[in-house]
Length: 169
Image (cartoon, rainbow, N blue to C red; front, side, top):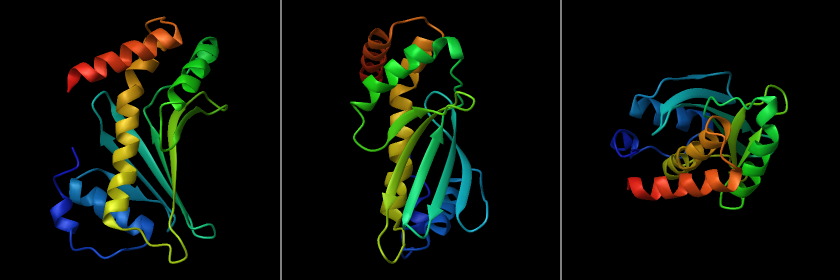
Protein backbone atom coordinates (compact mmCIF):
# COMPACT_ATOMS: atom_id res chain seq x y z
CA UNK A 1 0.00 0.00 0.00
CA UNK A 2 2.79 2.40 0.87
CA UNK A 3 5.30 1.42 -1.85
CA UNK A 4 4.51 4.06 -4.48
CA UNK A 5 5.88 7.52 -3.86
CA UNK A 6 8.66 6.40 -1.54
CA UNK A 7 11.22 6.64 -4.31
CA UNK A 8 10.46 10.34 -4.73
CA UNK A 9 11.62 11.12 -1.21
CA UNK A 10 14.08 8.24 -0.74
CA UNK A 11 16.99 10.68 -0.72
CA UNK A 12 15.35 12.91 1.88
CA UNK A 13 17.41 13.73 4.94
CA UNK A 14 15.83 13.62 8.36
CA UNK A 15 13.56 16.63 8.70
CA UNK A 16 11.24 18.42 11.05
CA UNK A 17 8.37 15.98 11.68
CA UNK A 18 5.54 17.92 10.04
CA UNK A 19 7.75 18.76 7.05
CA UNK A 20 8.70 15.08 6.57
CA UNK A 21 5.08 13.95 6.88
CA UNK A 22 3.95 16.61 4.39
CA UNK A 23 6.57 15.30 1.91
CA UNK A 24 5.38 11.74 2.51
CA UNK A 25 1.72 12.64 1.93
CA UNK A 26 2.61 14.65 -1.18
CA UNK A 27 4.71 11.83 -2.64
CA UNK A 28 1.76 9.43 -2.25
CA UNK A 29 -0.80 11.91 -3.56
CA UNK A 30 -2.72 11.90 -0.29
CA UNK A 31 -4.58 15.13 0.42
CA UNK A 32 -3.24 17.00 3.44
CA UNK A 33 -2.77 20.44 4.87
CA UNK A 34 -0.49 21.81 7.52
CA UNK A 35 -1.99 23.67 10.45
CA UNK A 36 0.77 25.92 11.67
CA UNK A 37 4.22 24.47 12.19
CA UNK A 38 3.10 21.71 14.51
CA UNK A 39 0.15 19.93 12.91
CA UNK A 40 -0.73 18.12 9.70
CA UNK A 41 -4.19 16.88 8.77
CA UNK A 42 -4.79 14.50 5.91
CA UNK A 43 -6.83 11.67 4.44
CA UNK A 44 -5.81 8.19 3.37
CA UNK A 45 -8.02 5.54 1.81
CA UNK A 46 -7.84 2.35 3.84
CA UNK A 47 -9.26 -1.08 3.08
CA UNK A 48 -12.65 -0.29 4.65
CA UNK A 49 -13.01 3.49 4.65
CA UNK A 50 -11.18 6.78 4.28
CA UNK A 51 -9.26 7.62 7.44
CA UNK A 52 -8.68 11.12 8.74
CA UNK A 53 -5.13 11.50 10.08
CA UNK A 54 -3.88 14.20 12.41
CA UNK A 55 -0.19 14.38 13.20
CA UNK A 56 0.72 16.73 16.03
CA UNK A 57 4.28 17.72 16.96
CA UNK A 58 5.09 18.80 20.54
CA UNK A 59 8.59 20.25 20.31
CA UNK A 60 8.91 20.80 24.07
CA UNK A 61 8.53 17.04 24.63
CA UNK A 62 10.04 15.92 21.27
CA UNK A 63 6.95 13.78 20.69
CA UNK A 64 5.04 13.26 17.46
CA UNK A 65 1.49 12.05 18.00
CA UNK A 66 -0.40 10.31 15.19
CA UNK A 67 -4.19 10.13 15.41
CA UNK A 68 -6.16 8.06 12.94
CA UNK A 69 -9.93 8.53 12.90
CA UNK A 70 -12.04 6.01 11.00
CA UNK A 71 -15.13 8.27 11.11
CA UNK A 72 -16.95 6.05 13.57
CA UNK A 73 -19.10 7.68 16.22
CA UNK A 74 -20.16 5.39 19.02
CA UNK A 75 -23.76 6.07 20.07
CA UNK A 76 -24.36 6.33 23.81
CA UNK A 77 -26.42 3.12 23.78
CA UNK A 78 -23.42 1.17 22.40
CA UNK A 79 -20.67 2.70 24.59
CA UNK A 80 -20.52 -0.14 27.13
CA UNK A 81 -20.06 -2.79 24.42
CA UNK A 82 -17.63 -0.56 22.51
CA UNK A 83 -15.48 -0.02 25.62
CA UNK A 84 -15.42 -3.76 26.25
CA UNK A 85 -14.32 -4.26 22.64
CA UNK A 86 -11.64 -1.56 23.06
CA UNK A 87 -10.20 -3.44 26.05
CA UNK A 88 -10.04 -6.67 24.04
CA UNK A 89 -8.50 -4.94 21.03
CA UNK A 90 -5.93 -2.94 23.01
CA UNK A 91 -4.61 -6.21 24.48
CA UNK A 92 -3.60 -7.15 20.92
CA UNK A 93 -2.11 -3.83 19.80
CA UNK A 94 1.66 -3.51 20.24
CA UNK A 95 2.03 0.14 19.28
CA UNK A 96 -0.55 2.75 20.18
CA UNK A 97 -4.09 2.15 21.32
CA UNK A 98 -7.72 2.75 20.46
CA UNK A 99 -9.97 5.02 22.48
CA UNK A 100 -13.34 6.71 22.34
CA UNK A 101 -13.34 10.44 23.00
CA UNK A 102 -15.77 11.25 25.79
CA UNK A 103 -16.92 14.35 23.91
CA UNK A 104 -18.88 13.16 20.89
CA UNK A 105 -18.04 9.46 21.06
CA UNK A 106 -15.50 9.53 18.23
CA UNK A 107 -13.39 6.39 17.85
CA UNK A 108 -9.69 6.91 17.19
CA UNK A 109 -6.33 5.20 17.14
CA UNK A 110 -3.50 7.08 18.86
CA UNK A 111 0.24 6.45 18.68
CA UNK A 112 3.19 8.60 19.75
CA UNK A 113 6.82 8.60 18.63
CA UNK A 114 9.58 10.11 20.76
CA UNK A 115 12.15 11.71 18.48
CA UNK A 116 14.94 12.66 20.84
CA UNK A 117 16.83 15.90 21.35
CA UNK A 118 17.18 16.83 17.69
CA UNK A 119 13.47 16.35 17.03
CA UNK A 120 14.00 15.07 13.49
CA UNK A 121 11.91 12.46 11.72
CA UNK A 122 13.39 10.04 9.20
CA UNK A 123 11.48 8.71 6.21
CA UNK A 124 11.40 5.14 7.60
CA UNK A 125 10.03 6.42 10.91
CA UNK A 126 7.38 8.50 9.11
CA UNK A 127 6.39 5.52 6.95
CA UNK A 128 6.17 3.26 9.99
CA UNK A 129 4.03 5.69 12.01
CA UNK A 130 1.50 6.07 9.18
CA UNK A 131 1.55 2.39 8.14
CA UNK A 132 1.00 1.27 11.73
CA UNK A 133 -1.99 3.57 12.20
CA UNK A 134 -3.59 2.43 8.94
CA UNK A 135 -2.89 -1.26 9.53
CA UNK A 136 -4.36 -1.24 13.03
CA UNK A 137 -7.46 0.68 11.93
CA UNK A 138 -8.00 -1.66 8.97
CA UNK A 139 -7.43 -4.72 11.15
CA UNK A 140 -10.06 -3.82 13.74
CA UNK A 141 -12.56 -1.73 11.73
CA UNK A 142 -14.83 -4.75 11.10
CA UNK A 143 -15.01 -5.58 14.82
CA UNK A 144 -16.39 -2.12 15.57
CA UNK A 145 -18.91 -2.46 12.76
CA UNK A 146 -20.02 -5.86 14.09
CA UNK A 147 -20.62 -4.40 17.57
CA UNK A 148 -22.18 -1.10 16.49
CA UNK A 149 -24.33 -2.24 13.57
CA UNK A 150 -24.36 -6.05 13.68
CA UNK A 151 -25.30 -6.31 17.37
CA UNK A 152 -22.56 -8.87 18.05
CA UNK A 153 -21.07 -9.21 21.52
CA UNK A 154 -17.53 -7.75 21.76
CA UNK A 155 -15.63 -11.08 21.93
CA UNK A 156 -17.73 -12.53 19.11
CA UNK A 157 -17.14 -9.40 17.00
CA UNK A 158 -13.39 -9.46 17.56
CA UNK A 159 -13.14 -13.16 16.75
CA UNK A 160 -15.19 -12.70 13.56
CA UNK A 161 -13.14 -9.68 12.48
CA UNK A 162 -9.80 -11.41 12.99
CA UNK A 163 -10.97 -14.52 11.10
CA UNK A 164 -12.26 -12.34 8.23
CA UNK A 165 -8.98 -10.36 8.14
CA UNK A 166 -6.91 -13.56 8.10
CA UNK A 167 -9.00 -14.85 5.22
CA UNK A 168 -8.44 -11.74 3.06
CA UNK A 169 -4.67 -12.13 2.65
